[in-house]
Structures are given as structure tokens and as C-alpha cells.
Image (cartoon, rainbow, N blue to C red; front, side, top):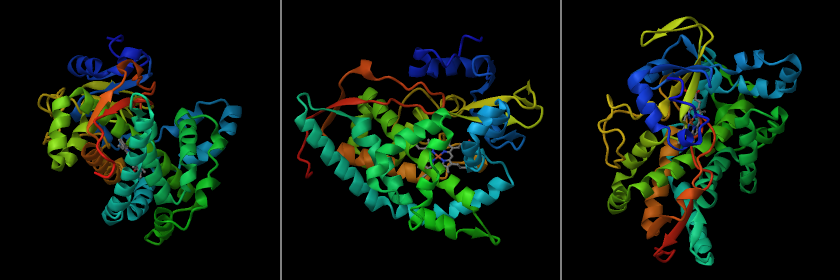
Amino acid sequence: MTDIYDPRQPEIMADPYPAFRRLRAEEPVHWSPVLRGWVLTRYRDVRAALFDPKLSADRITPFMASLPTDRREALSGLERMLTRWAVFVDPPDHTRLRGLINKAFTPRAIASLAGPIAAVVDRLIDDMLANAARHPEGEIDLIADFAYPLPATVIARILGVPEEDIFRFRDWSDDLAAFVGGAQATPDKYARPAQTDVIGALIAAEEAGRALTEDELVATAVLVLFAGHETTTNLIGNGMIALLRNHCEMAKLRARPELGESAVEEMLRYDAPAASVTRVAREDVVIASTPIAKGDRLFLMLNAANRDPEIFPDPERFDVARDGAQNLAFGYGPHYCVGAPLARLEARIAFQRLLARIGDFRLSDEARLAWSDNLVLRGCPTIPLTLTSIPSPAT
Ligand code: HEM
């Protein structure tokens, strides 16, 4: 069974779903020698694990502890920050931290961003149409020209980072994602724009007389910056690929823009940008009759869970009008994504405006669609599209 799921194989990177199907059916709690951890693929097991207090979200402390002293010292700045990221903190500290972060991400604060998001979307579409008009084949790159700058601009605005810095985010967050260059993501960089909404709200947030410490504040600003853009970029990218491969669904959404919300939900279910999350067993546990030892790592495959036929009828079908169980794309339980309402709002506005303003999208070259080599962040760094029958940008 060990050959079923080797995430290093390019064909598995491109399409992990056949392997997930077999794992779910044949070995839903699978020991992966490549990942040196347990791979969980059934919806009910993944969801229960996300809620299980016996599983810790802190994978930074054991990782750092496993490093030789000199390397650990070199990464001490990064360790100081990452151990304060809500996503890696367990209760009771997590409960306090999360309560404070929630105060900055209220539904009202997010809803008030709809207008500014639509303005950014329309500006990017104008630029994209102008680029396409200049290109001999009308080609653009959906990622570079649209899906990357949109969430980066929105997050920059929320955090008060100057817009001209947004293209530097990618390098910084790539460094973080690759877990190298600890000191490069200079935390001060994010402490400065303290006058803005989220940072201001974080500073003001207080619960039972306790506010965020300065370290927690800086760590949270960096977490929001990191968590809030590449994932949303890939939601738009993966969603567009799903529409391109399912022309009838694209036509349906174009004809019925009110399906925007269910379409984005289906994009999240069908091919989510955060493909998996990791936990570490705090004690010996048994999951679906499989004994798991204290200290073992578990990879909760959200994308496999989201195609579990026990939960989603006809799960391999992409259906923009699908209704039913909640997908796990934003996780579940205490660590459920803080930014889910923002990501959903950005994606809905993005697809509604793209389909309203651009007549036709074609993938210029399927062969250039390379899926990134990353177990967690699923997406294509480049999506070359040819825009045909472009109506006037004023539409
Ligand atoms: C499509 C876009 C996004 C996806 C798929 C996504 C996915 C996730 C997932 C799966 C988790 C849970 C991790 C775990 O259980 O270990 C999470 C947590 C988190 N996300 Fe997102 N996210 C997205 C967008 C955003 C945005 C836009 C923001 C901020 C503006 C954000 C901020 C966070 C934060 C702060 C956490 C940690 C919450 C906690 O630990 O309590 N995310 N996200």
C-alpha cells in the first residue's frame, strides 16, 4: 500500500484524487513512510481529528526540538514568532489569542470590505484586458495579473502595508513556507502600520483585562499576511481551472451570478488551496481502529475528506449549484479559519465580475499548468489564459 500515496510524484501532485480515493476505501488511516506520519482521508475521521483535544496543533516545538543546537539558535527569531501563531497554539493560550483575533475580524468589518474589493477587482480586470489587448494572442496570466494581486492588495489595505510593497510579500511568505531564513521576515516591518483597522483592532482588543502581548501582535499580523493571500490566490486559480474543465458549469454560473456563493463553496470543496493540515498526537490514541503513538504526526487531508462519497453525493463531479454538507476547506473546530468570510467574499466578487466582464476564457496551454510541489498549498503558479471576445472594459 505504500506506493499508493507518494506526494513527491509529479502525477500525484497534479492529480492526487485517484490516490485519495483508494486510500479512503482501502486504508483510511495510512502510515506514509515518505511523510513519516499518518495520512487520514475520510471526512468523518478528518473532522473528528480537527476537533480532538488529544491532538496538538503545535508542530513547531517538536520540530525545533529535533534540530541541532546551532541550527535551532539560527532560527530562534522564527521560532519566537511561529510559536505565537494562533494556528500552532493549543488551548488555553489559543482560546485567549483567538478570542482577541475574532474581535478584529467581525462580520461587520468584513462586510464593509465588499465595495473596496469590487473596486480592486474592476481595476485589475481593466489592466488585464489592456494587457490582453497588447499581447499578440490576447494572453494573460491569471495568477500574476489577477489572483495574486487581488488578495495581496486587500490584505495590504487591511494591515496598512503600502501597496507598492505587495509584490515583496511573495518572497517573504515563500521563505516562511519553506521554513528557512528565519530573520529575513523582519517582524518590525509589520509592526509599523499600527494605525490601521486590523492592527488597531488587535491592539485595542482586550478580553478579561488581557490584551495581546507585543510578540503576539507582531506574530498575528504576519500570520494574517501569510495565511490571507496565497491561499486566496489559489482559491481563485483552482476555481478557474475547475470552471475551464467544466464548461457547462462555467456557462451556468455566467447565466446565474446568484450562484456565486455556492460556486465558491464548490470550488473550495472540489480542489481546496489548503490541501492538508498537520497535528501531533499528545498521547496514544486510536483512530478508526488504528493505534497511533504519542508524538506521531498526522496529516489530515482536507481535499480527500471533501470528496468522501459518504458525505458528498457524486463527489468527483464539479457542480456550482451543489448544496449539502459543509466542506472542510477552512478546517473545523477551534482553529477554523479566521479569514473564511473574507476569502469567500473576495472569490465571489472576483468570479462574478470576471464572468460579467470577460466574454470567454481559454487555457492557452494545458502543458504549462504545473502544480506546485507543496503538500499544503495546492495551486498552479502560472495559469496562462487567452481572453477572447473581450467586450468593452466599461461593461
Ligand atoms: C481560500 C483561502 C483560505 C483557506 C483555504 C484557508 C484555510 C485555513 C485552514 C485550513 C485553517 C486551519 C488550520 C488548522 O486547523 O491547522 C486556517 C486557519 C487560519 N486562517 Fe485561513 N485560509 C484562507 C484564507 C485566510 C485569510 C484570507 C485569512 C486572513 C485574513 C486567514 C487567516 C487564518 C488564520 C489567522 C488562521 C488560524 C486560526 C486559528 O488557529 O485559530 N485565512 N485557514
